[in-house]
Amino acid sequence: MSIVPPILRLLRPADWVKNVFVLPALVFSFPRMVQDGSDVMAAAWATAAAVLGFCATASGFYAINDALDAESDRQHPVKCRRPIASGAVSVRTGLILGVLLPPAAIAVAFGLNTGLGWILLAYGFLQVLYNLGLKRCHGLDVMALAGGFTLRAAAGAAAIDRPISVWLLLEVFFLTLFLAFIKRQCDLQTAKKSGAQEWKSPAGYHDEHELDWGTGLAGGLAVVVFVMYATSGHARQVLGPGAEALVFLTPFVISALLRFHRRAREGASDSPLAALLEDRIMALSAGSFVLGLAVLLVVPDLRQALDGLLMTSPE
Image (tube, rainbow, N blue to C red; front, side, top):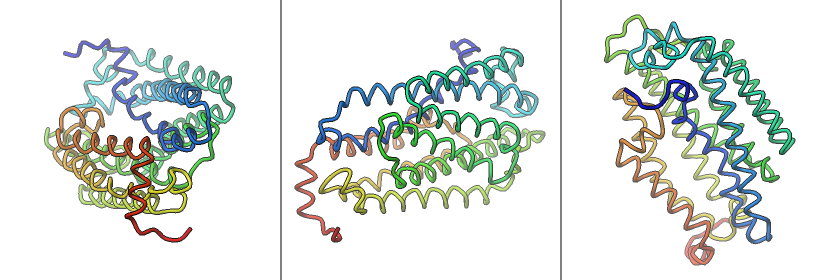
């Protein structure tokens, strides 16, 4: 039995790690901010506020989603353990939390940064549409989820008053589209292996080959966009000479995507946090990517040295 109180489990604190997609704007802007003498700490606090805003807003909609899907969740071998589906928290309580948390977070966001407030409001509107029907629309459901994460990336840029990179938005969209297909794959495999014949995918994902195709398409595009960004003039403008060295991190990206797909086919948890804690290769791939990225960002001399070795296209 979980030692986490049911009301806290309803807010899904383990899923707050998904708000890491707010951070890329700050991370990739770091070298330029240092070069320009910008206040990095102020930018970090603004980014933290954006993360908290998305945590509160997303938790509110998690509560609403669980309240509306309680009957369906009771038919699924894993989702039946959710606080509302299991009866640990009432539907009324879930709806109250869902109604209160998002507006409060959005109001605070507008007080801190108008751009952040509008993006958080757009995210809230998208979640309303998702709960009203998009989550039952085949194809649109996964794109709506990916769109929500893309808004997180845009919010990170707005919070620190930096232009929003189209490369960043594309990378986040395709990567989280991959994760959305992974979630559908996990749900399907778990239901099949446990013999939960009464459970049906709300959006009609009943063919595992179709989901394999979706994850392959989204994952492949995520890798392609990452490589294209690393070799673009935009990367050199943001990170400086030697930005092309980012391509050396591509194997870690591919490894992580492959592990996620394998876990989905095995019916394991679709939670990124669970994957990092349970899968050593996944943790090694993610850790190596983060370490390599950090070294490239904070050691300009290394980028300069690599710039002398790598053939680059003329700017």
